[in-house]
Length: 344
Ligand SMILES: Cc1cc2nc3c(=O)[nH]c(=O)nc-3n(C[C@H](O)[C@H](O)[C@H](O)COP(=O)(O)OP(=O)(O)OC[C@H]3O[C@@H](n4cnc5c(N)ncnc54)[C@H](O)[C@@H]3O)c2cc1C
Image (cartoon, rainbow, N blue to C red; front, side, top):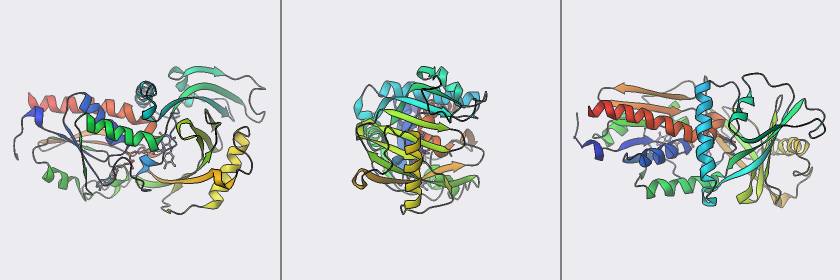
């Protein structure tokens, strides 16, 4: 069974150092588990395949999810709200205006009103007349350019260790850490190609956003309906993120100017008070990232493989930030259970 290390010194091994791997590492370390993260890309890196560097990233209640998944989002909200007390975290509280083209279905984003602060249905006249109804509330935005380095520092200061390395399989990890019993696969899109995972449900989904530098960066706008349009403020970086697009199986690292122009036009219609029809070119830059999407939704489960336990937490598509800390909380409970079984 490999080298035996006592329980208290046996590291939990995490493959992947995106928001999911790092949030999980932080939570495990806070619960006393030693942790090693192995990943090709680490906090602070900027590669289009490292989705966590490019997210909007707004906390928005997802529609069409299960009650358990709603709870994961709610826990994330609670933890981000606490983090927002420290500006270094890159997390900010902002106002939100959500415009709907139809009355909300019972399984729509409306459940979020039990989580966010200051939720209120807006009165006709307070929102553009071509929408059917609208909500305002307070939510949280996370600036990934600040949050990932912050999270990396937190993990290190809690005693976590990062190893920069690409692996071709989970087996390679087992051989690198023969003394470990618990392994967490938080490799995002990596799970499509790891030779002993090869999850065919995973697929890349390209995103391209416009970043507009502006001082008016305290309100989020979200169009909930026919069109996927948002204006996500980044108060700490003095700008707003305009989006979005989801381009399945497109891996282009080049800026598509047609997409950018279309996003500016849609964002202008949604929030003309913030986004001018023709922004000054020097105020505009571009964000491109590949979302780690998965048909049927994300995986969060635990499997016993011989004397090891392998947890899977990947496939978060466009919602990895909104689920992050709730996933981390759930994974800690799964690790506690696995290690309890190992010890007793
Ligand atoms: C333009 C854009 C806008 C977005 N907006 C939002 C938003 O508003 N709200 C929201 O919640 N989400 C948003 N997202 C989605 C969010 O960014 C992702 O869901 C999230 O970052 C996924 O995190 P992850 O840790 O699973 O994956 P990633 O961040 O991709 O990290 C994967 C990690 O695994 C490592 N890895 C993979 N394979 C291997 C291997 N074989 N060997 C070693 N290491 C490996 C990588 O190096 C990396 O460290 C957005 C995404 C994009 C692109």
